[in-house]
Image: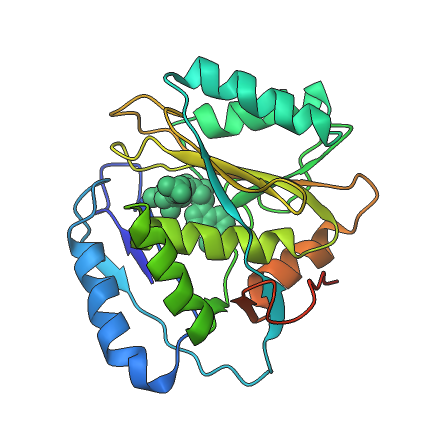
Amino acid sequence: MDIHTPESKGIGRLHISGAEGIFYDSEITKISAEFIKRALTHSRGKADRVVLTIEKITEKPVRAALLPVMTSECSSPAEAWALISRQMQNIGISQKALNSALKIVSSEKTMRGAALIAMRSGRRLERDRARGVRVSRLGIDRPTSIRLSRWLSSRKINTATVREALILASKVASCKDVVAEICVSDDPDYTTGYIASRSLGYMRITGIKDRGGMNGGRVFFVKDDADAEAIALWLETTPVMVESPNEKKNNTHR
Ligand code: WAQ
Ligand code: MG
């Protein structure tokens, strides 16, 4: 689903938000209603166009492990960024790549998708820099979903925002050429973001942005010699179902 602002003078339509998932047939009417309700009450603005697309998935989804969740409390974006830099440097992300990432997540000119950044050179690798790479065709299997809801509820964070971000991060982390992700919500009131990688898991970071900020974005750090086109295609089109890591072995793909 995608929602847009009205055309304003000379600017054209702005993309407010999007959401996607893989669902069973029996869930589709309920999920569609939930998506539409979210679209009509979004904190980034009032939409005048909502586009809902429902596609049958014909390929058998590949499996990816649900990342483990932890939370680091930070009280300001500066403190959060210091933590992020430390963690990212530990897994080999260069200063150049971090600077490039900071620029993206601090910008109010938000992208629809994520930037692909080479982890050493810091170069931007995605073909369309205004749009970025939009991760899609991702879901969670039923037993994992039930267990996850229970666990998140016990920590009072069982929201669609957390669940969807965790599923997305788990798909992204399962791509072998992606080394890490940084995410800052573009919703002005959502000040918790996360960093994620196969080794780090899904690390939520509070205070990652100032309340009221219209900035936000996602960055995927990839290996410098990786095929960026192939990564983008995989993230956008390959159906992936996330499941508890104990269900089966931890797969990486591509
Ligand atoms: N694929 C790639 N990039 C995306 C996608 C997608 N499907 N959806 C959003 N983005 C990018 C886009 O640039 C947005 O501006 C940015 O990410 C932020 O998107 O555990 O709500 O949907 O409490 O605003 C983190 C949850 C929530 C942390 C993140 O992101 C927690 C969030 P938003
Ligand atoms: Mg948003």
